[in-house]
Length: 354
Ligand SMILES: Cc1cc2nc3c(=O)[nH]c(=O)nc-3n(C[C@H](O)[C@H](O)[C@H](O)COP(=O)(O)O)c2cc1C
Image 1 (cartoon, protein in one colour):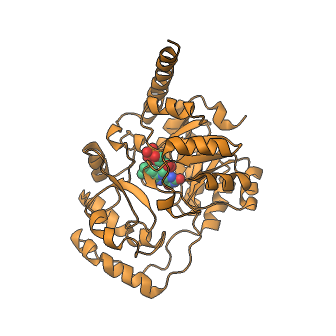
Image 2 (image 1 turned 135 degrees about the vertical axis):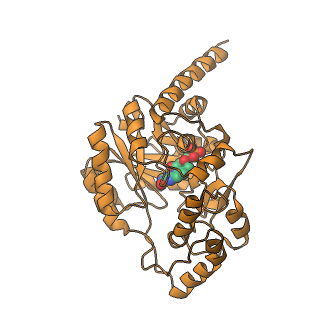
Image 3 (image 1 turned 180 degrees about the vertical axis):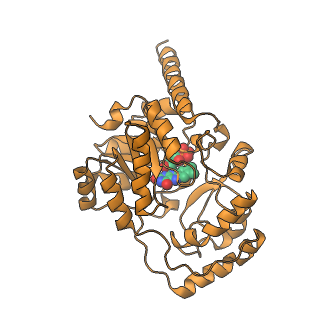
């Protein structure tokens, strides 16, 4: 039986770089769910110490999550042109245009080694696929491997390299699309058909992600055959969320149907609350350099906007059901969602047995 089937509460707090830190992970895992720490923006040493901090707080299982990026080297001219395009945006938030960076992301192999050494109960991945050897290294360390899929083909690919479970990421999801076999635009499948078709195609457990905001959604995911529900946006207003104030305000004040997909912010397709930057960059979003380059080039811009409390520039990652986000302690939210899920299942059982 996989660890996911033995969780006291089958809710996984989605890894969320920039929104969920060690405190969130600990709160969720202590409550009986599975907390996940996104380590994509961390140096290897930071990954090691974050895992140590979680273990100092709890013996409960947790996940570390990586974004599989094996970047090519962009030409200096392309980087300079991309920076130049951002000049008016930097001016708008009163920040200097940065120099051309020497490095765009931490080396994946170095980060991967730190994750293997940290040996979390679960190691999850998005953006690309691991090799069989990489999966075997994690297994040897005692970690179970979860791969993110936006399509049935991607789920089959993860099963073929030996993953222990697959996270079916519906098009509703907030944050980056995990698609790696086809363009994200060709892999926009809703959570309902995605979980059902992946479940029919692979023998490993399926995790459902995308638009799950409360116990009803958790119950629906389980009814579809998912082993657990992975929730991201639902945690963005939790007490332990480290999302910046402008982002939280945009979530609290979000109107109906406000999220869009964009490449303009990071160079990779992601869903967030639409702001001026997304709107005005839409015409050129396919010209910006691919992740992680554009992500690095907008890093100081997003930080400056956040420091000014300006939501019109920067990343307001959130899923389609963002208006249902609520505040409170992350551990108590998990417990409340599980109570609601049981009530929803009970109500459905009564309804269907009439
Ligand atoms: C703010 C934010 C950051 C995210 N960062 C990551 C990440 O670092 N790694 C990852 O695998 N998924 C990441 N995701 C996607 C989640 O794993 C998950 O697919 C998504 O949150 C599910 O949809 P929901 O937001 O509607 O619950 C992120 C999502 C959000 C909202």
